[in-house]
Image (cartoon, rainbow, N blue to C red; front, side):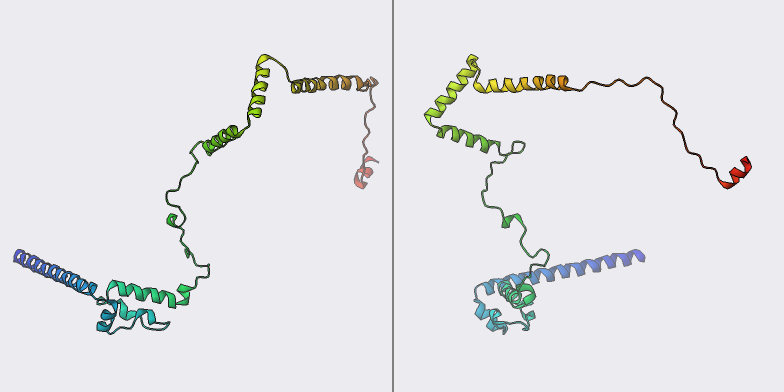
Length: 213
């Protein structure tokens, strides 16, 4: 008997689920047909049929709930929401203290097709090399000739005047060290006489003094 009840219970539940699915399908089909019909009409005609005011004429305190029903097309509902946003001071006038009150996404700051000379591990090396190359191309022929002659002098073993200055500066520490050695005062040898032992002060209090006496 219990098995028969289980069978009929499952059968009944299956029929109910089929009816619900059919009802949802019919509802969706009706919404699609209604949306297609409303798409051919203007907003003014739809507002007249639904006996609704123009959303742009609403002010603070007016009832916007009539525009939130399923009978109202999505485009008119969005117009009403935009008007509600503008008429509400808490939403229209941001004071800058609201968290996430601004757009911090990349789409608000990134430029389309943005390119950069920065390379991972190299930084701006390519940009610096390009600037150096442009600077060398802009140099006059006289400057290039002077640089070439200076390089040849270094290769031929000619010591420039700056190297003599470096050698003189290198020899100066030795001269300063020798002068310091000659100017040091003579070290006085310590006296070998043994020093006297240091005396320490002793204090005798009343009890100890009577015991010693």
